[in-house]
Length: 310
Image 1 (cartoon, rainbow, N blue to C red):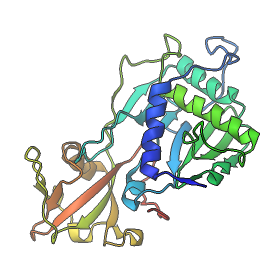
Image 2 (cartoon, rainbow, N blue to C red):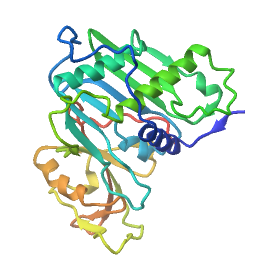
Image 3 (cartoon, helix red, strand yellow):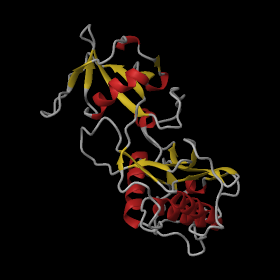
Image 4 (tube, rainbow, N blue to C red):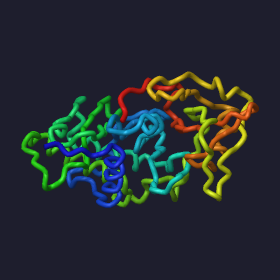
């Protein structure tokens, strides 16, 4: 019998496992401090390794605003999700953190990835669908060492010891173990060389552009947590009523558009101090909810065509 695991719970459990289990690079990994070792990669703001999530039994609102779990850029920047809480209402923005690796740090991570042997060619591993329902795909993308490889694996981190996994091949079970160990090790930097980081600590990632999902909620009561002002004035000169383009999958009139430049700089402090339930009022006293998706350095502002969802 399949076990149904709500998509959001899967993501939270996977994150918890990543932070709890830790991990170290395989014993056979090359020593990235060796001058003879050098994995070719770009040096700009193009991702050279990324871990993302797709699908799962999640709401369309969650799907629209979730971010990759881990992104390593060619210039050494790492952007990843920080600690998340279950408080409600939570912050309007996800807790993205950033830090910059030295070249030895970049090489250590790329060596860890390539040494798994999982990134020789694109592959999709979905055998766990025979055991788990409604899980998400964890998608690993490598663009380094002359390779552009995407590996997608369904239900990573959800297979438990008491499950009947006879319908999953031995090769795929080993892939689950390997990729989960890789995923876990990237959540901890203890195994990296002493000179791996150029920055002493992690800092908040301050986005300067956002995708905004805007919905008219005038007819709904405003929430008030007693601490943060929950109703604010629409901060820019555009018309909130016609902001962006309507998104049919939401089914409630939600519209999506992008703010960057001056508008992005105006929205950044608004969103950084807002809650999930904060609303904004226009000149006509109509009230709007705003769900924001910070844009990462490699992302364009186009609103993606969403599909699926709970």
